[in-house]
Image (cartoon, rainbow, N blue to C red; front, side, top):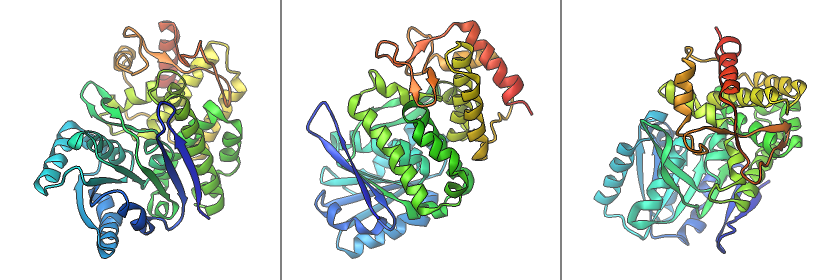
Length: 372
């Protein structure tokens, strides 16, 4: 059964569809034909062989002019140089404003392909086809695009909404269980910041979700996408409520950067969720029982909750100063007072925390949570 959500952007009359179901990859020709004359599928080298060539052949068989562009798999390639290389390849093919970018891949692909679509010829149509669970429930929704720089993650980019998001659940069958768990982290985050029912469903059905039970997985993905799109509808540009989607990422992004992205995004955010929840406990806002439940659900999904090595506390603090929620160089954190219930802080949805408490939480991370 196919389900659909419509994301309505509040600052304009713009809206787009999120289509969720199985076997959708090769059913997009009629819609795509209405969007543009030519198509540029942008993906990584792994997805190119798994699904990119298949999609190109399917669309070409239907009479569409389609080109396939790929770059090496890995977070380290989400960089300015990769964007420039791909843009040059599009120019060499003579592609112009009559072209639609199809972002086919995980979060790295959707971020960089979306950024290209936003800036190429000053903006061309974009269709997202995420191939990872993380991409389906998080990276593809909401228009965030960008690349990493040595100073931090996603420090260059823009908000650029797609024309459509196609979530084909059958693609998940090729996803390693570790990557599936990385995506579940973002779903758990959605439950923590917005809906305790989603958290409970993920907690109760971890075995079925990891086993790719179609009905249970689709329901969880639909609810996770619903939460994210409803937050975006209230705050597209991240001036307030959208900051909730950054729960766990203040520390998570810092850890990714410090490990040169050898720590996967989902694993880094899982640690970030726990450390930032630990802060809520130390502030005497979140009760310890709820904290224990958060740790338990992450372990249920097989998240290792370990770092390749310890990092000096000051080094981690320095890595957090360029977080997008920072104020005058001071990191700010999302604080929850219960599962599914964040604090609003006068519509800022984040707050500064005393440095001594942050250091305490980071010591706990180094010495207790992530110790080997």
